[in-house]
Amino acid sequence: MVTFLKLNGISVMYALAFFAHTEMWVNYYRIQRITGFHHIGTLINISILLIYIAFSILCYILTKNLFGNRRIKNVLSVLWIPYFLIFTLTFASQYPITNPQDKPLPAIGLIIIGIAIVFPFYITLINFFASQST
Image (tube, rainbow, N blue to C red):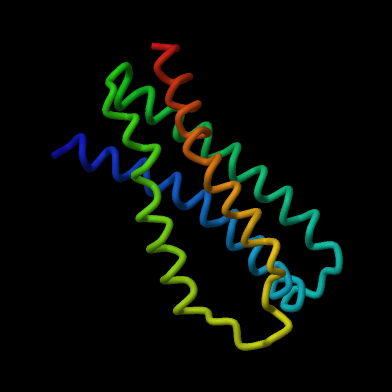
């Protein structure tokens, strides 16, 4: 049971990193309208980079300390998906798009799908490095 909770805790962190990434891209126009910054894209990209760096280091340390060489950590590559869906649906229901100008461009959805396909490999890479250093 403890291992199950540890797995879910790390999966929530991966889901939060991906959720922050997608929501910043999807709500680009809303963030720009609310803040008034015209070059918000640069700030969003820098914050996404910092979020990924911070969560990568944190998840690497936690995976290395909690799981070591155990193979159960490979479940993390898939376990983040339900948490991401929960975060996304909760955010979308709490903060709906009421201004038609805030709707994201259609191509953003395709980019997010591509990133979602690559994201499990990113998690697997972190797990690989965590098991190599033990």
